Length: 256
Ligand SMILES: [Zn+2]
Image (cartoon, rainbow, N blue to C red; front, side, top):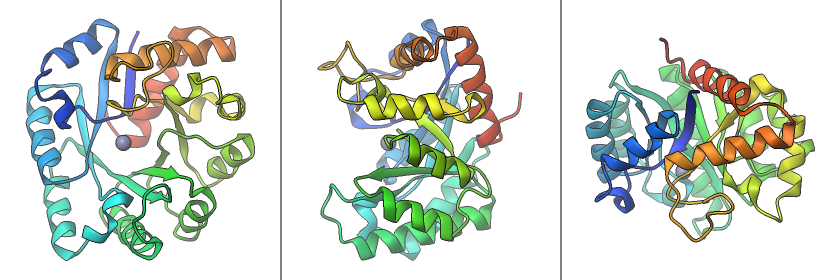
Protein backbone atom coordinates (compact mmCIF):
# COMPACT_ATOMS: atom_id res chain seq x y z
CA UNK A 1 0.00 0.00 0.00
CA UNK A 2 0.92 3.69 -0.17
CA UNK A 3 0.78 5.91 2.91
CA UNK A 4 1.20 9.70 2.99
CA UNK A 5 2.42 11.29 6.23
CA UNK A 6 0.80 14.71 5.84
CA UNK A 7 2.78 16.42 8.62
CA UNK A 8 6.27 15.62 9.83
CA UNK A 9 9.48 17.35 10.88
CA UNK A 10 12.36 15.09 9.82
CA UNK A 11 14.18 18.36 9.12
CA UNK A 12 14.43 19.02 12.87
CA UNK A 13 17.66 18.41 14.75
CA UNK A 14 16.24 15.33 16.49
CA UNK A 15 16.72 13.52 13.16
CA UNK A 16 20.10 14.99 12.21
CA UNK A 17 21.96 11.75 12.90
CA UNK A 18 19.21 9.51 11.61
CA UNK A 19 19.08 10.44 7.92
CA UNK A 20 18.64 8.78 5.48
CA UNK A 21 17.67 5.79 7.67
CA UNK A 22 14.45 7.38 8.92
CA UNK A 23 13.24 7.71 5.31
CA UNK A 24 14.20 4.13 4.46
CA UNK A 25 12.48 2.75 7.56
CA UNK A 26 9.32 4.62 6.52
CA UNK A 27 9.54 3.20 2.99
CA UNK A 28 9.78 -0.32 4.40
CA UNK A 29 6.34 0.22 6.02
CA UNK A 30 4.87 1.80 2.86
CA UNK A 31 5.05 5.35 4.16
CA UNK A 32 6.39 6.61 0.86
CA UNK A 33 5.22 10.22 0.75
CA UNK A 34 5.61 12.93 3.37
CA UNK A 35 5.02 16.63 3.81
CA UNK A 36 7.92 18.09 5.81
CA UNK A 37 7.24 21.44 7.49
CA UNK A 38 9.89 24.06 8.17
CA UNK A 39 9.55 26.63 10.94
CA UNK A 40 12.80 28.66 10.81
CA UNK A 41 15.87 29.26 8.66
CA UNK A 42 17.77 26.20 9.86
CA UNK A 43 14.86 23.79 9.38
CA UNK A 44 14.10 25.37 6.00
CA UNK A 45 17.66 24.92 4.74
CA UNK A 46 17.58 21.31 5.89
CA UNK A 47 14.27 20.86 4.11
CA UNK A 48 15.77 22.15 0.83
CA UNK A 49 18.39 19.42 1.10
CA UNK A 50 15.75 16.75 1.73
CA UNK A 51 13.66 17.89 -1.25
CA UNK A 52 16.62 17.20 -3.54
CA UNK A 53 17.62 13.92 -1.94
CA UNK A 54 14.31 12.13 -1.52
CA UNK A 55 11.57 11.84 -4.15
CA UNK A 56 8.97 11.22 -1.41
CA UNK A 57 9.63 14.49 0.41
CA UNK A 58 7.49 17.59 -0.28
CA UNK A 59 7.76 20.75 1.73
CA UNK A 60 5.95 23.61 3.46
CA UNK A 61 7.12 26.59 5.43
CA UNK A 62 5.39 28.86 7.91
CA UNK A 63 5.86 30.91 11.03
CA UNK A 64 4.60 28.76 13.93
CA UNK A 65 2.31 30.71 16.32
CA UNK A 66 4.88 30.26 19.09
CA UNK A 67 7.25 32.42 17.04
CA UNK A 68 4.62 34.88 15.85
CA UNK A 69 6.56 37.85 17.23
CA UNK A 70 9.38 37.06 14.77
CA UNK A 71 7.11 37.39 11.77
CA UNK A 72 7.97 40.50 9.78
CA UNK A 73 8.64 41.69 6.25
CA UNK A 74 12.02 39.89 6.06
CA UNK A 75 10.56 36.62 7.32
CA UNK A 76 7.86 36.89 4.67
CA UNK A 77 10.40 37.56 1.91
CA UNK A 78 12.42 34.53 2.98
CA UNK A 79 9.29 32.40 2.96
CA UNK A 80 8.46 33.53 -0.56
CA UNK A 81 11.95 32.59 -1.66
CA UNK A 82 11.68 29.07 -0.21
CA UNK A 83 8.17 28.67 -1.59
CA UNK A 84 9.40 29.25 -5.13
CA UNK A 85 10.88 25.73 -5.12
CA UNK A 86 8.65 23.43 -7.22
CA UNK A 87 8.39 20.86 -4.39
CA UNK A 88 7.27 23.47 -1.85
CA UNK A 89 3.53 22.97 -1.92
CA UNK A 90 1.97 24.67 1.13
CA UNK A 91 2.19 27.44 3.71
CA UNK A 92 2.39 25.99 7.22
CA UNK A 93 2.32 25.31 9.88
CA UNK A 94 0.52 28.48 10.86
CA UNK A 95 -2.24 29.01 13.40
CA UNK A 96 -2.89 29.75 17.05
CA UNK A 97 -1.44 28.22 20.20
CA UNK A 98 -2.80 29.37 23.57
CA UNK A 99 -0.67 26.84 25.39
CA UNK A 100 2.40 29.00 24.74
CA UNK A 101 2.70 32.54 26.10
CA UNK A 102 3.14 34.42 22.82
CA UNK A 103 0.66 37.36 22.94
CA UNK A 104 -2.58 36.68 21.11
CA UNK A 105 -2.35 39.92 19.16
CA UNK A 106 0.96 38.86 17.57
CA UNK A 107 -0.47 35.41 16.83
CA UNK A 108 -3.55 36.87 15.10
CA UNK A 109 -1.39 39.16 13.00
CA UNK A 110 1.06 36.45 11.89
CA UNK A 111 -1.80 34.09 11.07
CA UNK A 112 -3.75 36.67 9.07
CA UNK A 113 -0.71 37.80 7.14
CA UNK A 114 0.28 34.25 6.27
CA UNK A 115 -3.23 33.36 5.14
CA UNK A 116 -3.00 36.39 2.86
CA UNK A 117 0.40 35.25 1.60
CA UNK A 118 -0.94 31.76 0.82
CA UNK A 119 -3.86 33.29 -1.04
CA UNK A 120 -1.57 35.56 -3.05
CA UNK A 121 0.52 32.52 -3.99
CA UNK A 122 -2.55 30.27 -4.51
CA UNK A 123 -1.17 27.71 -2.06
CA UNK A 124 -2.95 25.47 0.45
CA UNK A 125 -2.30 25.96 4.19
CA UNK A 126 -1.56 23.64 7.12
CA UNK A 127 -3.13 24.84 10.37
CA UNK A 128 -1.86 24.32 13.91
CA UNK A 129 -4.41 24.83 16.71
CA UNK A 130 -3.79 24.27 20.39
CA UNK A 131 -6.33 25.30 23.04
CA UNK A 132 -7.59 27.99 20.65
CA UNK A 133 -10.24 26.30 18.54
CA UNK A 134 -12.91 29.05 18.72
CA UNK A 135 -10.64 31.94 17.72
CA UNK A 136 -8.95 29.75 15.13
CA UNK A 137 -12.29 28.88 13.58
CA UNK A 138 -13.39 32.53 13.47
CA UNK A 139 -10.23 33.71 11.68
CA UNK A 140 -10.30 30.84 9.18
CA UNK A 141 -13.94 31.48 8.45
CA UNK A 142 -13.59 35.23 8.08
CA UNK A 143 -10.66 34.92 5.66
CA UNK A 144 -12.08 32.01 3.62
CA UNK A 145 -8.73 30.45 4.49
CA UNK A 146 -9.31 27.05 2.83
CA UNK A 147 -10.16 28.45 -0.57
CA UNK A 148 -6.92 27.10 -2.07
CA UNK A 149 -7.05 23.99 0.11
CA UNK A 150 -6.53 23.65 3.84
CA UNK A 151 -5.47 21.02 6.35
CA UNK A 152 -6.29 21.02 10.06
CA UNK A 153 -3.11 19.36 11.26
CA UNK A 154 -3.39 16.85 14.13
CA UNK A 155 -7.09 17.62 14.42
CA UNK A 156 -8.05 17.25 18.06
CA UNK A 157 -11.55 18.68 18.25
CA UNK A 158 -14.80 16.82 18.86
CA UNK A 159 -17.34 15.70 16.25
CA UNK A 160 -19.25 19.02 16.29
CA UNK A 161 -16.04 20.97 15.63
CA UNK A 162 -15.05 18.48 12.93
CA UNK A 163 -18.24 19.33 11.08
CA UNK A 164 -17.62 23.05 11.39
CA UNK A 165 -14.12 22.84 9.93
CA UNK A 166 -15.31 20.46 7.21
CA UNK A 167 -17.95 23.06 6.32
CA UNK A 168 -15.17 25.61 5.86
CA UNK A 169 -13.61 23.27 3.30
CA UNK A 170 -10.79 21.87 5.43
CA UNK A 171 -9.29 18.40 5.34
CA UNK A 172 -8.90 16.89 8.82
CA UNK A 173 -5.54 15.23 9.46
CA UNK A 174 -5.37 12.73 12.32
CA UNK A 175 -2.19 11.99 14.26
CA UNK A 176 -1.20 9.50 16.96
CA UNK A 177 -3.33 11.53 19.38
CA UNK A 178 -6.37 9.53 18.29
CA UNK A 179 -4.80 6.38 19.76
CA UNK A 180 -4.51 7.89 23.26
CA UNK A 181 -6.76 6.56 26.00
CA UNK A 182 -8.24 10.00 26.75
CA UNK A 183 -9.01 10.88 23.11
CA UNK A 184 -12.51 9.42 22.75
CA UNK A 185 -13.78 12.77 21.39
CA UNK A 186 -11.21 12.67 18.60
CA UNK A 187 -12.31 9.13 17.74
CA UNK A 188 -15.90 10.42 17.50
CA UNK A 189 -14.66 13.17 15.16
CA UNK A 190 -12.98 10.53 12.99
CA UNK A 191 -16.26 8.67 12.64
CA UNK A 192 -17.92 11.89 11.51
CA UNK A 193 -15.23 12.71 8.92
CA UNK A 194 -16.01 11.62 5.34
CA UNK A 195 -13.32 9.35 3.91
CA UNK A 196 -12.58 11.79 1.11
CA UNK A 197 -11.74 14.53 3.65
CA UNK A 198 -9.42 12.56 5.95
CA UNK A 199 -5.61 12.60 6.15
CA UNK A 200 -3.11 10.87 8.45
CA UNK A 201 0.15 12.16 9.92
CA UNK A 202 2.76 11.71 12.62
CA UNK A 203 3.85 15.25 13.60
CA UNK A 204 7.17 13.50 14.30
CA UNK A 205 9.20 13.80 16.46
CA UNK A 206 6.14 14.54 18.65
CA UNK A 207 2.86 12.73 19.41
CA UNK A 208 4.05 9.11 19.22
CA UNK A 209 1.03 6.80 18.87
CA UNK A 210 0.12 4.01 21.28
CA UNK A 211 1.64 1.54 22.09
CA UNK A 212 4.96 3.26 21.37
CA UNK A 213 4.62 6.19 23.81
CA UNK A 214 8.01 7.07 25.26
CA UNK A 215 9.79 6.39 21.98
CA UNK A 216 10.51 9.25 19.58
CA UNK A 217 7.93 9.47 16.82
CA UNK A 218 8.99 9.10 13.16
CA UNK A 219 7.19 8.90 9.81
CA UNK A 220 6.95 5.09 9.76
CA UNK A 221 4.49 5.37 12.67
CA UNK A 222 1.89 6.82 10.29
CA UNK A 223 1.34 3.15 9.51
CA UNK A 224 0.21 2.36 13.07
CA UNK A 225 -2.10 5.35 13.32
CA UNK A 226 -3.59 4.45 9.95
CA UNK A 227 -4.20 0.84 11.04
CA UNK A 228 -5.75 2.07 14.28
CA UNK A 229 -8.17 4.38 12.44
CA UNK A 230 -9.06 1.68 9.89
CA UNK A 231 -10.01 -0.61 12.76
CA UNK A 232 -12.14 2.11 14.38
CA UNK A 233 -13.95 2.61 11.07
CA UNK A 234 -14.15 -1.14 10.34
CA UNK A 235 -12.56 -0.75 6.93
CA UNK A 236 -9.34 -2.22 5.58
CA UNK A 237 -6.04 -0.43 6.13
CA UNK A 238 -5.45 -0.71 2.37
CA UNK A 239 -8.64 1.23 1.61
CA UNK A 240 -7.88 3.91 4.16
CA UNK A 241 -4.29 4.20 2.91
CA UNK A 242 -5.44 4.66 -0.65
CA UNK A 243 -8.08 7.27 0.27
CA UNK A 244 -5.84 9.33 2.55
CA UNK A 245 -2.98 9.15 0.04
CA UNK A 246 -5.16 10.48 -2.76
CA UNK A 247 -6.70 13.14 -0.49
CA UNK A 248 -3.29 14.45 0.53
CA UNK A 249 -2.07 14.61 -3.05
CA UNK A 250 -5.26 16.35 -4.08
CA UNK A 251 -5.17 19.06 -1.41
CA UNK A 252 -1.44 19.68 -1.96
CA UNK A 253 -1.90 19.51 -5.75
CA UNK A 254 0.81 16.90 -6.24
CA UNK A 255 0.41 15.13 -9.57
CA UNK A 256 1.64 11.74 -10.68
ZN1 LIG B 1 4.13 20.33 13.29
